[in-house]
Length: 144
Image (cartoon, rainbow, N blue to C red; front, top):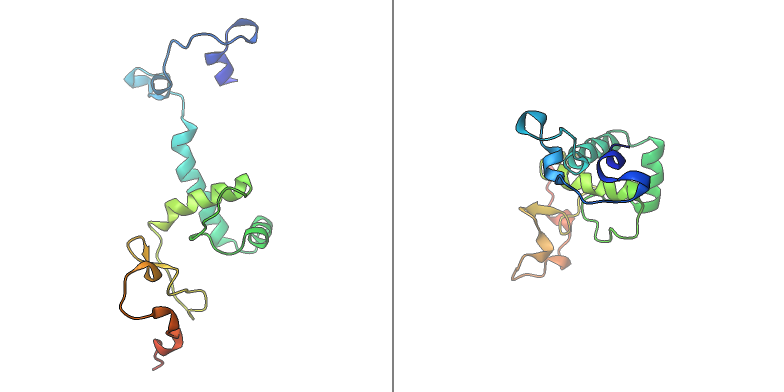
C-alpha cells in the first residue's frame, strides 16, 4: 500500500519518480520521509531467524528443513536450488558465522579438513608438503 501510494499514479499507471529511494529511507529529521528499508533490516532479521533455528533443533520447521537440505549451514555450495526459507537461513548463517564460536564436545561433527579454522580458509586448501588426507584424525587426538 505504501509502495503504491508513492510510485503509482492515477488509474494504476506508473509515472516519473520525483524522489529517490535513498531520500525516502532517510529519517524525517534529516529531510527524508522516514520509511524503513527492508534491505537494511534483512540481515539482522535473518540472523535472529537462524539463531532461533539453531537453538530449537526439534521444531517442526527445523526438522523439515534439515531432512530436506541436511545439517550443514556453513559450507553450502549450491544455494540456487532451494526454498526461499532455506536461502534466508543461509543468508543469516553468513552473518552469524563471523561472530560464532564453536563448542567442541565429543568432536563427532568436526571435519578437520573441510571446516574453516584459519580466517576463511579450510585446511585442505592450504599448501602442505605432506599428504594430509592419508592421515587419520584419531592419531591427532590424545586422551588423558
